[in-house]
Structure formats: structure tokens, C-alpha cells
Length: 146
Length: 361
Image (cartoon, rainbow over all chains, first blue to last red; front, side, top):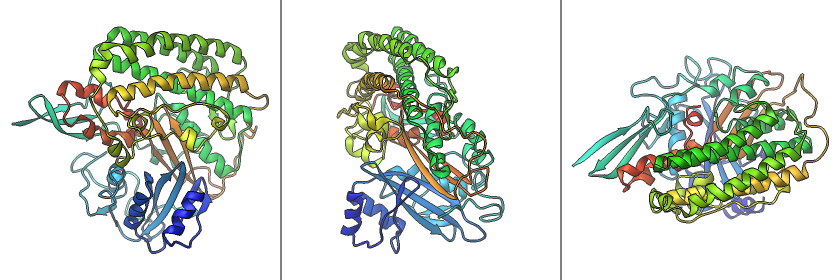
């Protein structure tokens, strides 16, 4: 953990990394998804993926952003109260397809970019695959421990 | 004047549905747009409806080539949540099956690449060699494709006679080093069709976050087996071949050299195969803690990522997210084909060894 610990220290982040379920998690605190993406770019991290969870009731969604530094998998969890989150596509080209897929599967908007159809065809309805009918929180939520 | 040529979705080169719209000027490709999702199966959603036995069988069907890798990654994540550690023999068997799968995937790709080069004799040779790998996998698991080897806490089948597999590996290695690799590395036909085309620069490989042989052929020395070892890889010696050119030939060379490294890993794993149990023996009921576990494995095409969430006392996962290697590599194809000759595009897009089954999971 030396490199990621020093990385956080250099960025002035006091929060400790927590190793859980194979991921080094860091509470992003006041950092936005774009701040984290820029920070990861500065440290030459490789973007891995974004995992989406539908939260109970009207709480929205949780998005987990994963990055890799020298084989250490880093995780940053963000709660999205509504249906939109800033895109990191302009900062990280590798996030293109997963943002488009989440847009189609959960009907989440990634602001600052246009999401071309990926798995769906032009004109198909958004959010019918993984988002519960009637919007977030209408059925058993996918939220687990975090 | 520019014109658009649609390649796919039923393209004869790969027998899987996807579409590449090529914007051309004369014989030169200026841009390309990729379209996937023609066979999307909603497997992540289905996984939420399957219990902890059924979900393993389901995820084995994400891909027909690297089926074992998917169950290995899933089982490693579920083992974290269930608190099980596979016994040493199981960890070695996992390595053996994973490397055999890498061999048959790489040789299959070499055959398809040969066909796209117009080198059909080589296609037949590759598929003959691949059959021998399939025979070994069948001897171990009883199956040619979906091996059903992995379970929570170990593997389902033992390797009872490592010596016989060792002999088959030796014969395979001779054939590969005598026929396939020399032809791919020295043949004028292969060189003329592959060198200098479909270049993915080092910078673009990094910005697109490509993985596996596609990344290593562009000078990105990234291999999950080395940087984040799983199963028994930490106890084995091997190299991850890296090339700098980033063209189709570099991707071909990386895979050819990886075939030899896989044989090296297999020999070591068979020699070191420890005695003992092949699983924890708990096959009736597993208790999962509430939480999320992530596992990554180096598949033949690159890193596979599984994130599995579970709630205590539940028989089904609350979320399974899969990021397959082709999903990371495919978006780089438009960068590879820009400026290429139209006739080279089938080979260029095939050079990442795309798997649409994985992508349309």
C-alpha cells in the first residue's frame, strides 16, 4: 500500500485507505467524480470500470469507480441522489462505454457528454434492463453493505 | 468524397454479431463507428435471480472460449464473502485449467487470424493443435467447452495423472515451437499482412485503458497474474511478453510468446501440484456475509473484473457486475483502423481477439 498511501498524503487527504473485499477504498469526501478522475490521471492510474447500485426508496444510486495502480485496485464510492452525475469521459477515454451502458441500463444521465446508443438501438427505452420498474427504489434494492 | 461501408452485423470473419461502420475515402479508412448489443442477454440481471450454485453455471456461459475464467473470477469473489480459502491443490488445478484455456484461446485466435490473412493451411494447422489442447481439457473435466471446474472453496475435479498431461503438454510445446510460432514470427506472408498496420500507440493504449495482449503489444506491461497474483501464480515463474510496436504483428507476437509461457507455467504447476484435498468439502450450505467483493483474473484476452454483492441469509446475489476484457479493448478499434487500408480492417479488428459473447453479456 505504500504508493497509494503516499499518493493520498501528497494530495493532502487524511482519510485512510480501507482494504475490503479486494479493493482499497477511500472516502472521496468533498472530491467529485471528476476531481477523483483528474487525481487518478495525475498518478497514472488505469481506469477499470464503474459499478452501479440502485438504492432503496428515493435515495437514488451508488456508483463505484474503480482504478488500478500497479495491481492495487482502488475504489471510490459516490451516492447519486438524482438521475445525473458528471461524465469523466473527457478526462478518461476508457470510461466511454461503461458510461453509455449505465445510461442505458439505469437511465442515469452523464452530464457534459452525449451518450450514443451502445447496447440499445436508437429509440429504445432507457432503464428497462437493470433499473427496477417505476424508478429507483420500487423493488428490492441492490444496495449491499457500503 | 467519403462513403460509408457497413461491416456486419453478420460478418463472415468472426461468426458473431457486431457492426463496424467504416467511413472511407478511396481505399483508406478515415473513421469507424462500432455497434454492439445485437445478442445482449442481460446476464447481470439474470444473476440476481440465481442461487449460489446456479449463478456459477450461469456465469460460465458469459463466454464460450474463456468460460473457466468467468467461474474462477466469480468463485474467488464469492469465497471472499463466504470466508472460504481453496486448498493448495485446488489453487494449482485452477492455474492448470486457466493456462490450458489460454492456450486453446490463443491457438484458436491464431487460426482465425491466419484465415483472415488468406493463409488457410495455417488455419487448419492451428485448429489441429487446438484440438489437442481441447483433448487435455476434456480428459481433466469431461467437457470440451464449459468445464464446470470451479466451485466455492476449490474445484470439482482432480487431476489424477499429472504425468500423462505433462506428456501431452510436451508434445504440444514441440508442435507449437516447431510449426506455429516460427511461421508466425518469420513467414513473409504473415509479416506482409501484419507489420505496421492497425497501430495502437502506447499513449492511446493507456488513455483507452486497454488490457491483456492488446495492451502488452503497445508496450504496457500489465498482467494481473503478476501484479495482483491469484490462485497459485505467485509460486510460479513466468514472463509476460511485451512488444512496443503496437501493430497487428506485435499483438500476434505477444500471443505467440504467451503460448510458450503458458507451457512453462503448466509444466511447473504439474510438477509442483501439491497433494491433498481439492475443495473445502462444504457443498451444501454457504453463509455469505453482507458486503461487496471484487475479484480480477487475467483471461486470455486480458483482465476480467467481477464485483459481487450479497446480503446475509440470501441465497442469491444482490448484484453481479462483470467487466470483460473485450469490453475494454473494443473501443480502441476505431483508433487502430483510422488511416488503414479498407482490406486490412477485418484483420485489424480481429487482432484484439474480440469476443462479442463476452461483450454482449
